[in-house]
Image 1 (cartoon, one colour):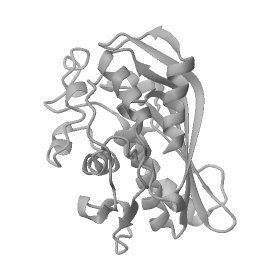
Image 2 (cartoon, one colour; image 1 turned 180 degrees about the vertical axis):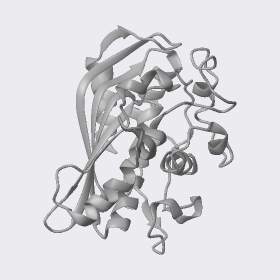
Image 3 (cartoon, one colour; image 1 turned 45 degrees about the vertical axis):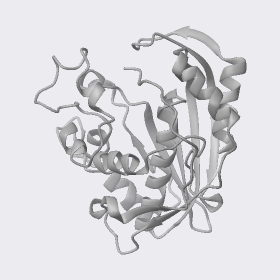
Length: 277
């Protein structure tokens, strides 16, 4: 995961100090960086601190279900969206207890068209890769300008584009507008690597490369975030694990937590940093 650590180092050495809207209120950032991870090198997940893969799986399955009910995520033992669901900004807008609005999964699976018809972008993506693998329209977007005020948090990882090479290898290019390098990005990398592998299995392609374009990549100036970044840079990364997917799954809706496992994941001890809401 040298690519990730290189961006951390870049921000510490060259970052631009700026205020922000969060409870922390200030960060150091760089603009426009890219990381590339080949699946043949191992499953890309940070090893200089533990990343809870069970929570990565749970959140991704929640997105893929098109849910906007945080209680359904909580039933899988994942509480990473609780603070956003209960934020002072959002609570007056929530339509029911547990509502997080029309966030990622809703946009992926239930995008509202002008005619009121819901568009399943994930379903269209998988079908499109099967029918026309070399097409240039294999895109899923969560950034819906008309519904940003209906979300407890506008999408940070906002758009991805899939590409099939002439030798049937599938790559996924993620564009992320807002990149919390200490907490968010270590979660986003394995999430989209997992999604890449799932799509590859369902489209009879070979998972090849995850490309992550980081737009506003930042480290919050909270002392715990600063210490976390510095400590991660002092640690030597472990070898990457391997991903196992249940080969019997042929429908994106059929994946469950037990159908995805990491083999040989080893990490350094936990590092605490508070979430910026």
